Image (cartoon, helix red, strand yellow):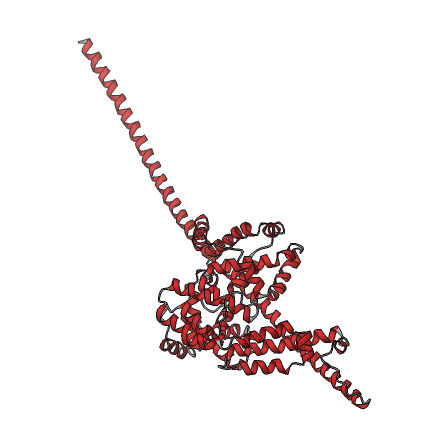
Length: 491
């Protein structure tokens, strides 16, 4: 009996212990539940913070992208404003030269009157070397500038309004220049004008044969470009340049006369057309002051750029476009000029990248140029790297305007011929050619003088020298595309 009671008491004690254990476990369970709830709350808070951080990061990314775009836009505006100031400076120099010319003519009239009074019938300007030696070097250089300026203005007018038979007019200009000045001062320039005159007979051949080949036989674009490159190395009548350019660019965007007129009619009430835009467009019109019918050209140029701003609101008008539109407008009607402008900005990835401020692609193109620069011109590249000269300081202006700001009209036209044939790669090769031509002078300059030298000397490079250097830089299109893609992948 005692044993049973002891066993019963033992089990009672065990039961009490189990109950206590159960209660303890329940308490622990409750604590764990509370901890889980706390962790869930903390997790929710972390999720909210993460969402807030993600939203803040997105906003910051958008803000930085906007800031980068604004800074790049400011850089373009500064480049164009600098170009405008240089153009204004050129205009002032031209006016000074005209004043000097007028003073020179007055002095000559006074000298002739004095000679008549003294009974001296010998002209002060004859062909003999003895009389020419009396002309001072200042007078010779002055006449050099004056006559050359007249020739440039005349040739510019010829570009805008080509005539079917302008040989007599060119010859009359040559004949009107005094023999002494022609022989001594401008033999080389006159030879160039004579060469132009001698090539006029080839225009009929182009009209009757070459253009027919482009329209009928050469349907394959590679064959066309190959044939055209061969022809461009020889004579190239200006009157056909607009047709060739339009043909090479094509019309992937299907812009026609009806679309042009529709966009034109929408200008007066369009919300994108503001006074600020109009003032921005008018800023770069100094580039056409020397052309015949410049007022008409300005109106048409303003119309084209305004329509493009409506047609491509994602890109909009940027000041560098004035140079592109101008190169088309002086060679074709305004509807075709708009077609070519819109299609070249669509077709050329390099131009599209620069005008749309695609930072990722911009950086890739700058790095791509650096790689070719280091490979082809290592000494000059190391010089630029040592003084930390940013390549953008000259690349932006050159690429934005396709070098039409850097060279005269004749050289720029030849550059555009090759650019439209060969594409974006040609601009890289041409940049290397320009720097190669200037390399001896650039290696002697310090940081503050390099950019000034590039702007001044580039305009003076002769077209034969330019293309001589260009032939040194052979780059395959496949190599160009592979390296560009590698730069994009690495960024």
